[in-house]
Picture (cartoon, one colour):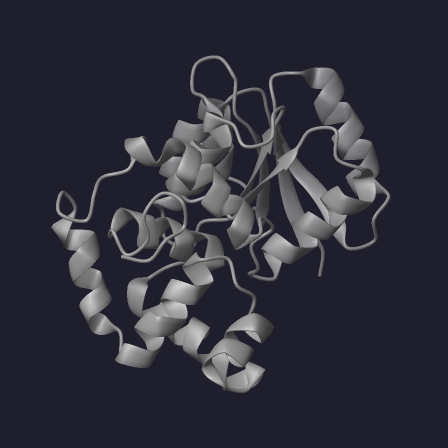
Length: 225
């Protein structure tokens, strides 16, 4: 079954290029296009979409706010933010709004296709270490743990071991690295990560990193509290 993709960008030429690349793939189908966030949300009311490729700087409704509204809906498609500059405020805001990752617009086609497939399968396409650098740069825009008691309270649902694993995920470690650090199997670490996502209602590891910063579990610079 094909991955159903919507392209959202105010530049028609850019959408055309993306559409040509995706159309050549046997497992992908461009089912909708939009020139801004408002049109994207309207399209989703009548079209089933798996992955949204979302530009950020658009008229009427920008990609960050559109991502926030889309991801707030039950059964929402995955959103992949497209940005011009690495580690910019738009990428940070898009991840915080619920996007599963971000990519640069000039990324090679093969990497874009791999990212769409990864997001569709439930993975994030931004390494937690990259997310950490984003959050370190824009951490002043995040509420502190004391200011966001609801976020901090959500961590009470975790066991001690799950909290330990979450902290290492937030520090950018892979499952293999966490397994070595805690003397566990990778399968056990993967199980813990899955339970963390389920208990906290998160979509992927990137959102684990964001939540760790919001709760005050990790502070700017990557240090644990």
